Picture 1 (tube, rainbow, N blue to C red):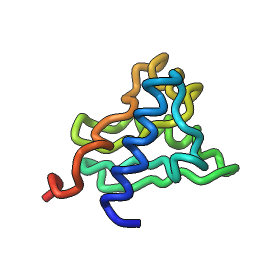
Picture 2 (cartoon, rainbow, N blue to C red):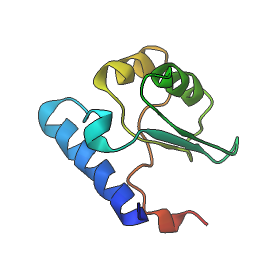
Picture 3 (spheres, rainbow, N blue to C red):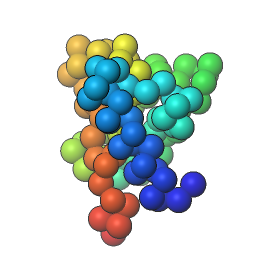
Picture 4 (spheres, rainbow, N blue to C red):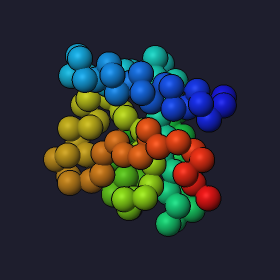
Length: 98
């Protein structure tokens, strides 16, 4: 997958959410992931392996420079409820990362 297609899927998810008030499911969005620069990890969510729980727990440790792609609406509600970071920086061009 090219960097351009990563951005394409994220923009598609954001547009879908804007008009339907619901994020695209992972199968249609292609993937859900977190990139933490501070803690030096990349998490790619997989199906049927406690991925949502791990993604929510890891988002607690993310800072404002990290990348978090959109998730299911139900999972985003848990992020907000616990005051963890939600989707951020997923629309930034990859060229901005040195």
